[in-house]
Amino acid sequence: MDIPCQPVDAAIENPATAADCIYVSSAVFTGSEEAPARKAVAVRGDRICWVGSPEALPAELRGEETLVEDWGDALIMAGFHDAHMHVFHSALYLSPLAERFVGDSEADAVARLAPLAARRPAGSWLLTQGWRDYLWSPPVMPSRASLDAVYPDRPVAMYSGDAHTLWLNSCALERLGISEQSEPPAGGSYDRDGEGQLTGIVREAAAMALMPRIVAEFTQEELLDAYRSFEAYCNEHGITGVCDVSLMAMPGLDFVRDDLFAALEEAGELTLRVSMFPTLLEDRGRLAALRESHTGPLLSARGFKQFFDGVSSQHTAWVHDPYSNARFEGDCGRPTVDAAVMEGLVAPAAAEGAPVRIHAIGDEAIHRCIDIFERHPVADDGSDGVPPRHSIEHLENFQPADIARLAAAGIVASVQPRHITLDPGGPERDLGPARVPYMWPFRSLLDAGAVLAFGTDSPVTDIDPIAAVYTAVTRRDADSHEPEGGWLPAERITLAEALRAYTAGSALAAQRADEVGLLAPGLFADMVVLDPNPFALAPEDIQKSRVQATYVGGRKVYEA
Image 1 (cartoon, helix red, strand yellow):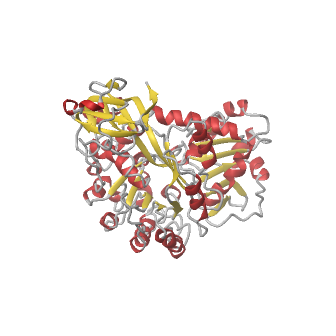
Image 2 (cartoon, one colour):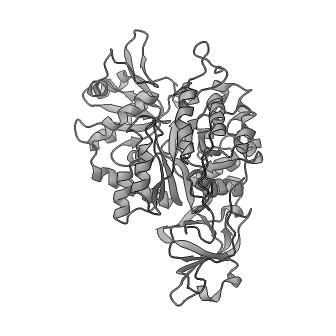
Image 3 (tube, helix red, strand yellow):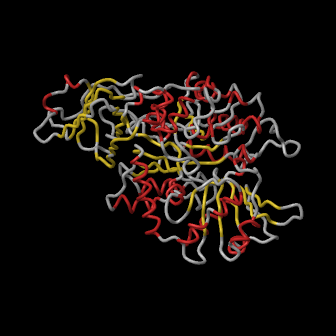
């Protein structure tokens, strides 16, 4: 994996100044090597100042007030960096303001609303996320009728697990001003039954556009509490950095809430290194404004996000050949915007040095995205930092030749391992056996020289990095541990490769490879301690490893 690596076993400026802290373990994984080794990591201020054998530690680094923490055989490594997350929705759905569940059926999903209805004020929205109709018994698309039967006078909004579809009741449709005569916005749709009546199912851009109106009743302090709790949840799981990426491609609706992050930063409560990626529009002023407003080491804006297609399970991902279970002739999904329009957005941003991250799931969306990025690489300002790179997000299904093309172009493959097992049998059902071997081809991407950046797409999957690493290494679901032997086991990767994708690879996607991602002098002291050491465990036991401590800029933000 072509990740710029800084040298280890070296000191930086002011070698005579004592370190604030020295962390020692028999298992330190710097990320520059294939296996952990006995090392010491010295930290001064918020940065690492020395890494090497404890016996070679310069005496001047150990002062009278230097704190030494010996972690024994526990693994010390760079902190996990989630390369693709939607923080607003992740925080919201894990807070008392909403609920998150899949449900066993349409009726069960409706029944699970009861606790939320009991604790929220009368007449307020009931908001959930997580249902997946293809996992239900029976696997049928829900309708507003089941919600109306229980909540005839209260608005209900239930986002699907992939966050691309919204299930509304009649009260919600009325409150949102959606009538039988309403037309959806571009890039979205309203489902209708055989008689042409609204079913309550709203898709893609139409679903996402409604979110700001639904959450408008939550106060700033309620949302800040949700963010505080979510930060703590991330730190507990060893996460030190996140890429907060836009959830939709409509002006003013990207949900990258810099105001909430800034309030936490000002109060000294920001315990994550946050890289913001607002929506790429013709007016590129939002990124410029964010960059001007947020210049600190914890909160900054790093590039743009755009959307090329939807999701395969709903046949909205853009594929070259029709879906195997096509719903109509020529059922190939669709681009959210024309390829020429996408190129017109990317070209000026890239020329200005702004990297772009594009949601592309279907093989045709990925193919066209590579075309655009090949023609418009990110302009490099010639500084000493790591050159910026474009990223493609999700990349579920490849045209075979595009794996090497992506690697040659230096495009970061920003992927979410737990997506592999979200829909057992789904790829075979939707795409057929000829295309299945090119689904989430992590091994093939690494062998071609591509950079993997790992994340979770939270709230689509949980933020736990260890579960995602387990899936990448075993190709098995982190909860059910199925299938035995792994799905497409030839695409398994090693533990070292998976951890590197979750640290150094994600740092490249975040445009922070000169700041985080490795344990090396000069980089921020963003670290996590895991015990037992996952390198000492069999692959099937990786999830037995637990976070013992998390450090952001040398500050301990979590301890078990």
